[in-house]
Image (tube, rainbow, N blue to C red; front, side, top):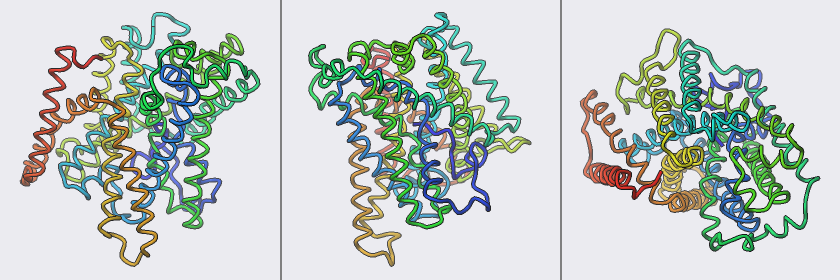
Amino acid sequence: MMVDTVPGSRVGDAAGEAPSATTAKMSVPTLTAMVVGSMVGAGVFSLPARFGVATGILGSLIAWAIAGAGMLMLAFVFQNLAIRKPELDSGVFIYAKAGFGDYVGFNSAIGFWASAVAGNTFYWVFITATLGAFFPAFGDGDTVLAVALGTVGVWLFHTLIARGIRDAAVINRIVTVFKILPILTFIVVLFFAFDAGIFADNWTAYGYGDLGGLDEQVRNTMLITTFVFLGIEGASVYSRYAKRREDVGRATVLGFLSVLAIFSLVTLSSYAVMTQPELAATRQPSMIGVFESVVGEWGSWFISAGVIISVLGAYLAWTLMAAEVMYMPARNEDFPRFLGRENENGTPITALVVSSMAVQALLAVTLVLSDALNFMLDLCASLALIPYFLAAAYGLKLGLTGEAYEGVDRRTRRKEAIFAGIATAYTLFLFEAAGLQFLLLATVLLAPATLLYVKARSERGRRMFTPTEMALCAVIVGGGITGVVGLATGFIAI
């Protein structure tokens, strides 16, 4: 899921509780708790309907097994990269730059920034869709009133951040409680409401209609499983705070398995109280409707309060993150200089303005989307695949070439290369699962962004493109043109 803290960066120090000298030696339980807190966010509240519309219980079990294995390998890649290349600490994009050149690194940074922007837009749609359960004028988060409220929220948070307001540790603690408590309550209550007959009928859900084969069902769940695990790269940054180096791997596994258990139990427990078609028809955030069907009206208020508090806390941290993802490449001379400007409060103000305007633009787009909430979720996950794939590929490149493995035994190098290879294959599979629509939409964003790269290179008097980079640029621009034509002709339906 999108993280509520972003450790290991300027934003992390601002948005989260940066370990101090007195907390620099963390135990396994403490490290595990930090890993869990970095991954559990808003997407979990939409799991019941997203799985219900795509598959039954068997398909969901297979999907979580694949996602669990793939994302765990990706977590190990980030952990290994932090150990093998500790000097690369400017963000996820820096791995793509180190491994495949400046232009690839630029596109990785743009992809991660655009993912953060789409995720922040998703948050406002999610909040207003939650309010829509009580106030119909908000609809599913895609009405004029919903966009108006989101607009007020975007610029209110923008103003607070521009003035130097940061996400304090106490806010993080409150947010963590309010996002974990309703989720655990949901799981426990639905466990006691377990209906064996409904659960059995949902095993394959074939009796309710044609969901396609298991392979199709699993593919149709991959983007939501990707979205809920966004932020998994944060697990590796705690390594320098561990009492023992081996504790990091243990905490990563324990924390990840805990989060995987929470997500899968939310999904499976939903299948125990509602049929697959009922789950598919539940309005988002679907945990609200499922819980209300079991406990009554108070359940909708209980889950809704948790949703709104959790999402607002996450939005603050990820607004800082979106600005940071533009600020750091500008400081590294990969983005134009103006994006590296700070105001008197130390806030990357130009990057913050651009990010807020981008969220505002996407909010306006929700007025013409057929399913704004799920579209923004899928767009966010699809864009995040770009830096994730490139980081995994860089880890694989290091393992195969032996770079950064001087003095490391062959068994360790071979193991880490295998992990990176699985992570690379998994992210490639996710691209295929996302489908052509989201790949073309990604190039629609990447193609015009190349102008920022050209400006940055010209400002520093650097060569624009190598022959390979020119070919890549041509592919991206061609994809962008195809995407625009597809949107205009209806080939790409949003």
